[in-house]
Length: 71
Image 1 (tube, one colour):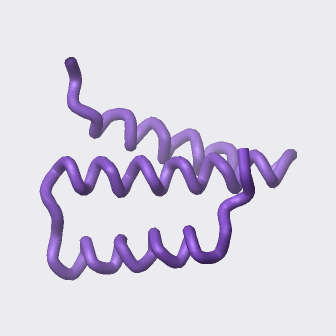
Image 2 (image 1 turned 120 degrees about the vertical axis):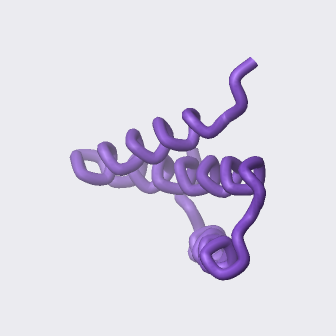
């Protein structure tokens, strides 16, 4: 799992800002939360021993997964 780049983090933050300003449909929001969870998981992997980073990543993934359509 690669370490997130500054560009990836910046792009996510810009997209989050856009979402706050103009909104998005539920599918776009779910995709955004999936990206957020992915970045947080990658950060946690590169911060071994950081229990808080691991917990934040776990919660973000849990939230992102809850937004996925059930089939």
